[in-house]
Every structure is written in C-alpha cells, then in structure tokens.
Length: 83
Image (cartoon, rainbow, N blue to C red; front, side):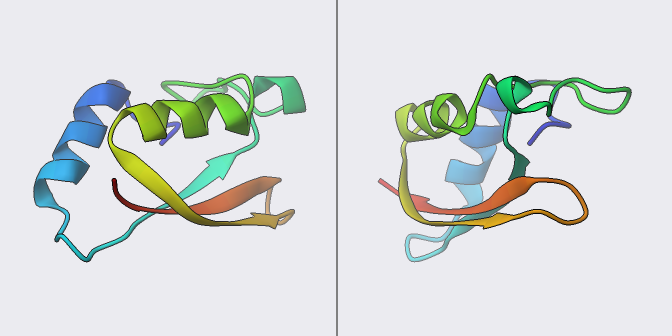
C-alpha cells in the first residue's frame, strides 16, 4: 500500500473487485513513527498501523487478522474482509 499514489482510489477498486467471501491481504510497514516512511519508492505513508487500520476500516473493510514480521523489514500482514 505504500506504493499507492491514491490510496482511496485503490481501496475503492479493491472493494469493487473483491468477491463477497474474499479477503484483502496487505503487507505493510509499521509507519513513520516506527522508522518506516516515505523513501525513494514509497508514494504514501502513515504515522502508525493504527492510523492505517482506521483508514481501511473507514474505507469499508473489517479487520480479520494481523501478524507481525521483522524480516526483511519490520511490518505486518493484515487481512481484511468487506465490512
């Protein structure tokens, strides 16, 4: 998601094409407060995962599961369904 130039547009497209029983899985960095922000290749960023989760929830998704990882960079896998 950090490569998306227009995150609301991306989320609208995911909602449009996602099957009613489908899942939306994203691998995301932990945010600018946790040393993950806009580098050379990132088009968007968030302060922390709570901020990103709030954006996704407001976009019509319901959090199903999240799982942390540290390699090759610190982040989380987040899994959503349509709300």
